[in-house]
Amino acid sequence: MEFYSSGKFLISGEYLVMHGARALAVPLRFGQSLSVSDKPGSGILSWKSLALGNAWFEATFDLPSLKILQSSDPEKADFLIKVLKAAQKLNPPIFTQSSGMQVVTNADFDIQWGLGSSSTLISNIAWWFKINPFELHFKVSKGSGFDVACARSGNPILYELKNRRSLITSVPFSPPFKEQLFFVYLGKKQRSDVSIGQLAPRLKSRRKEIRRISKISEEMVVTSDPSAFRQMMDEHESILSEVLDLPTVKSYLFGDLQGSVKSLGAWGGDFVLMTWENSIPELKNYLDSKGFQTWFGFDDIVLSTSQF
Image (cartoon, rainbow, N blue to C red; front, side, top):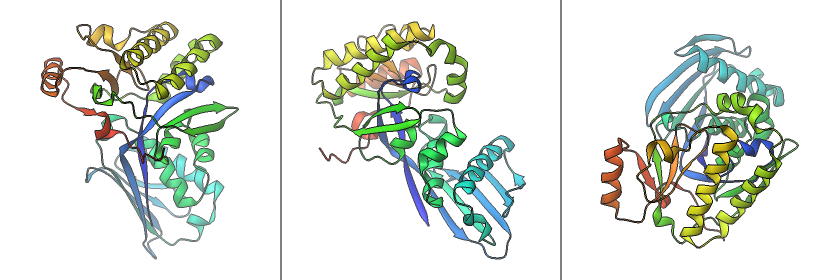
């Protein structure tokens, strides 16, 4: 058996999506596979995680107890056990009827990029166990679940969380000015679960901001005006800067940029969305001067089946 789930970018709605804001998110051309094969008579679950073909985590677990027998990273092993035990509660026979198996996951991206190594894992395990991915997600994560929605979507989505129910609408987000949109990696992977926990007190009772962010998400989908889109990016950054009491990424990293810069997901790391109207060589020179070598054009990384 083999399964594959896509990575994600949260274009709008970061943090406030947890409190009901409508968010715009896109699945990516990068993702993670999970393959399962029988290893009869071994009595163990052998697990190997690869990224770009290179091993970054290995562990063995007793079956069916899932007791850790060996691992290269105890923290990652504990999280994996947490996910597997939650999945096992939803579909018990998977392990009790097996005398041994081997699992290999392979991410086709650098896991430091923060594109969704956990969400794609949860989605793939849910497929393996034939269970609802959101039910599994909410048992093991404090996140909104937008990333799990992206993992299984072939198109950009508007995502809304209501009473722990995920409302998902596929949308045709492919701006006519997308050649001016770039995704730049800042080189610092963020833990979104930690960010959510630390900043939760600042996010309560922000109904006005939640309504405006929801409106921005909807307007981003339909606008054909690059100037209007940049204004939405700037306004979104301004709103979250005030809510989080944090400086915008442009103010401390790209103050000399003529275009707009917007954080994606947890502030302070991972990727940002940047607008650029000049040539690609000029963009490369600019980003090189800032020390940023990893970046993508819109169509280079955003997945869309163009069903609209």
